[in-house]
Length: 151
Image 1 (cartoon, helix red, strand yellow):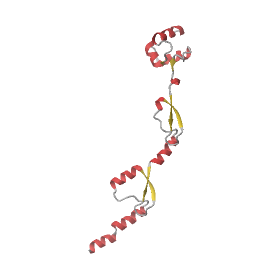
Image 2 (cartoon, one colour; image 1 turned 135 degrees about the vertical axis):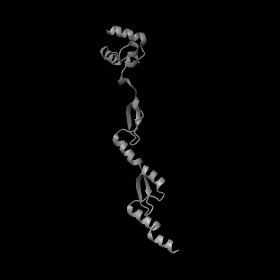
Image 3 (tube, one colour; image 1 turned 60 degrees about the vertical axis):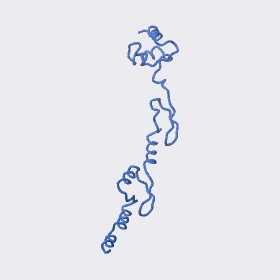
């Protein structure tokens, strides 16, 4: 198809001033989208047919560092500017700071471990195995059994 034939067909379906996508033009003319892309470049019709580079860009803010990110419209749900920002955010939000039930020291536990522990243990959380051992010794230890037997 020559340029004048192509432009005539284009005018028939899309009056001048309206800018159609490559897929819309291909469907109306009965050719492939790739052929429309070739004709668009070959006949210099960028002002008549929208290409992929004409898609709308969207500005989004990174949740972690609040830097502005310019993305394509199909990536508008993007939340982080980089994989490093995502890792930092996950590290900050994936743990909970709690107190040891034995010694009172603050320590961090992963959020899902905390939720699982609250449901299953009922005893509490401990910063180390030594604190857990001391707690069990004080509350369930050998001396407690002797007191229960003697009374």
